[in-house]
Each structure stands twice: as structure tokens, then as C-alpha cells.
Length: 344
Ligand code: SF4
Image 1 (cartoon, rainbow, N blue to C red):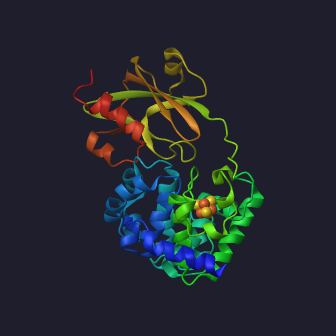
Image 2: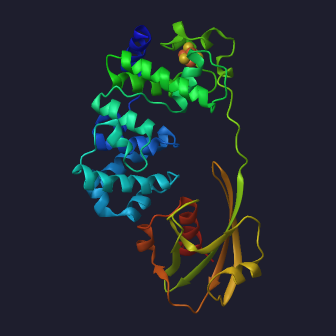
Image 3: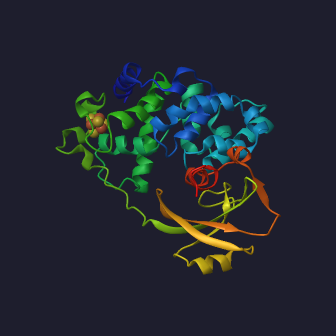
């Protein structure tokens, strides 16, 4: 194990990608980057990270800014629940830990949105704690190195991966180099398809490297069937302001803002939509259908222009709306059909 881990550490020292959160490390930057990186590509986060940190340089600044501003700054990164959890974690850090990100795995795991992987990553990378980490990359590397021909989401493989990671980090000279090296190896060398075993620091002790097709393991997860969602929105304007509402906290785009609307599992006629809305519309016409492919859902957004006599509700001009948390497709619709001078 010792020679395996020292090869990994040496390789990472020489081959680590230059990424914004690695240039200047603090516990807060590390926590933010780990939460951002969950389920989002490194390249997308790399482009946005410094702007986000300029806006929220400390947990206290984030708490003072409020959840809506965090959601607005998160726009386009998807999985908005992470932004709400990050804001909640910042509040917990301020209220319980004096504004400092805690250094132990246990205390990190008690923060909202921080699971065993993220706690281990922050504790090891920033505080050199000998904590194991397991994500999809580590599962893949483990199954190949140990030659475990199982499905990627097989619980016994996950268990093996935690044991493998634990063994590496306990034998390491530097938990940060070991763990980051393991993640980096999975991201850049031991990739899902066509791993580059010829340059891999673990090749000598890897079972899969001796196979003709090392990428045959682990076997793919069984993918859940994508859910279809029909989202019906009414664009209602008055004097340069648009009527918006906040979505429920859970589920798709939870807690984000949108024009008045509703969802259904099947398509809906214009009349049915009018009847189902909780306000009376004077006029309502369908103007566009937008399709959005998300990881677990296909969303059809039916865009309507409408008029109402109602004056109550939350009306926002463009500037005010720009500070609200809003899913990117919804913002695009407002830009195209409400704010754009080209709108008909
Ligand atoms: S030798 Fe190949 S299969 Fe094994 S860990 Fe390295 S890249 Fe992955």
C-alpha cells in the first residue's frame, strides 16, 4: 500500500491541474469548491469560482447577503439545492463555529449539505486529517485496481472503495496529496472510457490494467427512467414589472423564482391552464414551448402571455429580478419575452 500511495502522491505533485481553488487554499474556499463540484463539471466551476468567492469571501458575508443572493450568484450551475444548503452551512459556521470552517470530519459532517465525502475532502485537503474519501471517481479506480467486476452502484463495491481509500490515506505521507491525487487520477487518467493506463501511477498494481478493456469495469449503473414534466408559465406584465412567485422549497428548481405557473405530468390545453391558475386572466395566449433536458427530467416549458386585473402579488422590474435566484431557462424566457426590446 505504501508504494502505491507514494506513486500516487508523486504523480499528483507533478500532474495536478491548475485550478482556481488550488491556487489559494482556505477552509472556506475549499468547502465552497467541494459543494460546487458535486455533480457539475470542473470546467464550468473553474470559470465561475473566483467571481463567486469575490461576492462571498467569508461565511459571514454569505449569511448577511441572504439566500436569494446566493441563489442568484449560483445561476447556471444547476442543482440549486446545493446553493441553499451552502447558505445554511454558512449560517451554521457563523452561529456555531465563530465564523471558522471546522477542521474535524464530525463537525464538518454536521454542516447542512456536507456528507462523508465532502467532510473527508475538506478535512484532508485543508487540515491534513487522515480521512478517506469516496466519490464516483474513487469507486471506479477501486474497482479497476482491485479487479472488482461489479455495478458502479453496488453497495459492496462502495464499501470496498471506502476501505481502499482508508488504506491509502492511512499509509500516506500527506493526506491532501493522497486524496486529491486519487480524485485527480479518476478525473483525468482512470476515466470512465479509455483510461490511459500507460501513464497511470497505479498501473503496476492494477488488476484492470492487465485486461484488454479496463473500462469494462465497473459495470454501468442502472439508469432511472427520465421523468417528463410540463411547466406552464404566464408572463404577466404591468408598467415594466412582471408578476413572479417563488417555487416551493423542495423538488425541481426549489425555492427559485419564476412567472406565475403550475406543473403537470401531461400536456394541458390553454383553457385548462387558465382554469387551473389561482388568478383570473383577462387574456392568455401561448407564445412558445421550450424543452430542457435535465439529468433526471425532461422539462417542457409552455410560455404564455397573459393579462390580469389583479394588483396584489410580487411584481419586479428587470433590475430587481436580476437579484433573485432563478433557474437559467426561466431567466432566458424573461429576457426573451419580457425584457427584450425584440419581444413582440
Ligand atoms: S492502470 Fe488503468 S485501469 Fe488501473 S487505475 Fe490506472 S488508469 Fe485505471
